[in-house]
Length: 360
Image (cartoon, rainbow, N blue to C red; front, side, top):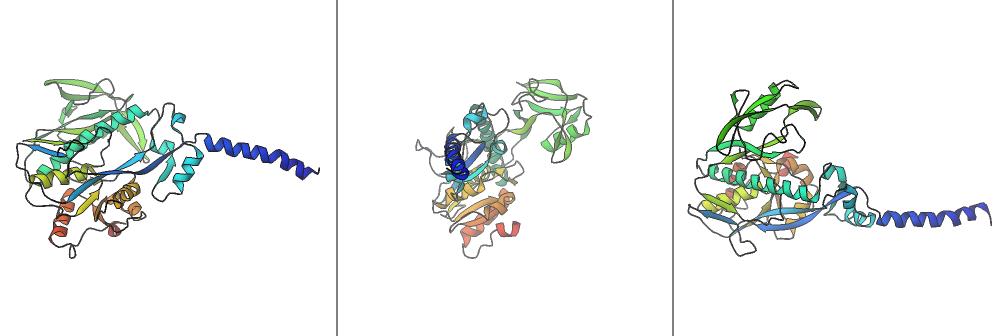
């Protein structure tokens, strides 16, 4: 037996063993896959309206505003318990509607399935409040608001000092009516110097001290106190958005705001059309980019959707997705989208819709 044949006899089993090991061993990647869609103008699983309003006239009409979702492979603790096999990753990699990413780019250090669900629930609740606020103010309804703590980062400077729901009234004596002033006052401070933050908690005013930490974000040094700011709104009437607890995150904010606006105003915002979309909504009505845009487009494609609302920051990626017969509409603000839908309702063939091609 010559040396090459001996080498082959030894090497082939080793290679086969390596391939078998790789096929079943978890690898540090996470996946995005198309999820379901929900008509926010329709009914939930209990035959109740998704958008429920008490104290204001409502207008129910035809048409659909569908929020879209993405199925993300869950986090694990330790992370390798959530790693995926080579076979599954390869199958998803070659599927045009699914995506594979490094695990660390999808899940944070120390993240677990439970912590991910909790964070998603907070983001969902905040996005619903912001969406209702944007919808009501778009209709000319005045809604008082107060800056508050929406989330506290575990282990950060504010952990154990500030609590979710604390109203943020001032920093070093300067009133903080919105998050722009809050961020400005934090950046004006010096590293290592404590900030005196005036808060209202459970109806009582108090002052606490938080020392910011300095971190590099996108190449710039920034001072952080480890909270996510949000708003507590004093709504003039009750609006509830009934969505399954299994769905979390802020990315349905734009659809929520449009659905609430359509429900409290006469006429149909969609003109009977099927409209789907995504996008985080800010209190000023601007639409923020989200993750998984291509998978959300794929999820809406099978629903016979005519228009898909794409956050402007996601337009480049959206143009690379298989949208089928759907028209991709650029969404910069809720106000702009509302006007675009009204134009489409009046005359679909003549409406000059904001285009993702222009943004890209």
